Length: 400
Image (cartoon, rainbow, N blue to C red; front, side, top):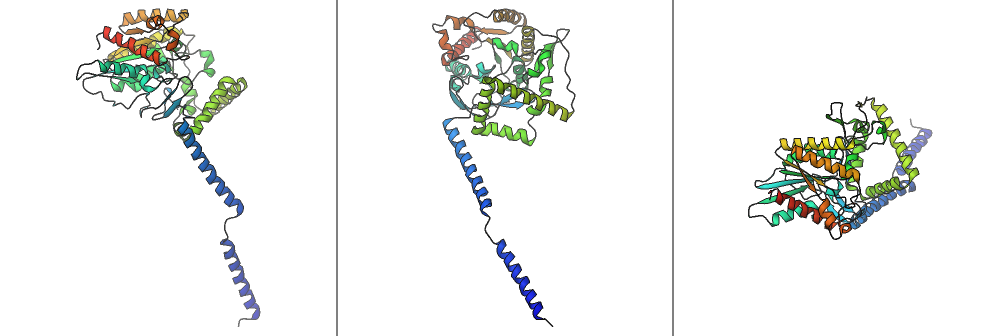
């Protein structure tokens, strides 16, 4: 029989369960709701900020991404608004070129010219259609007979050394089967192709070259190996950062601020270098990978560069491509080392059958040579004069 006590206990259990169910039906606590709403507001604010920065073109000067073989490459399809020197706004092609979209397969009847070099060829300081590559293509096609056509493709990439340009040719440019390569060479290029073996910790992550005891050109990838973790495009962390480089204007703004501090603040520079060294050593220890460092003595910057140009010419010739070096002008005529380099370069070009397009004479003869530059790079007028000089070179060589 059920007693009164049993009935009271049953009623108590029912009431307790009902109370618990009622508690479970309560709305989220004030703290939970605040955190949820704050997350939504922050996300909306970030989207709004990204949209605003995109509209005014701020945070769009992040143009490079790390790459394990070349050290860095253009970000494909990246929208760029450039204000560091001059001004331009435009989008890299899907292949990462400062150019319009191009087919890799060369159309029949087209004479194709590959413009290569560093920032002088890339020309971010002017609009894309004002670069000497674009102006040369327009000039050549405006004077051709019906059915004849030229393509001048701009492969220029900021910060590239001659060695990186040579490897870029083998990896990317060669597939376009150019009939002519116009390689822009600046006086600073000779300093970037090789490194002092005692100064490895300060070297930029890129491939370097040296001459062995027999005078043969060899490649030194040890700096790339030392920075392998940073240059890798694998792993969620690197992939996330690369996505931000390509798509986030906020990231670009923060990155540019960091770069400016790195250049202007000595304490920040030293701290950043220290953290980079610690990170590199930690990555090396974690990977437990022995990095093969080639043994060679101090190198001649000029001779390594000239050997690279010889190798470049040989590779191009084997593909049926004509090779020419375009010399960035020194209008002050004050750099003796550059003069000596040009003299040796022209002698080698004559001996090995490649061409040199010397921009010094036309730039020095111009009525306003300073107006041909912004600060360090060509102005719109400088690009136009470069295109004009190359066009005359092609006429002289009976290429057009």
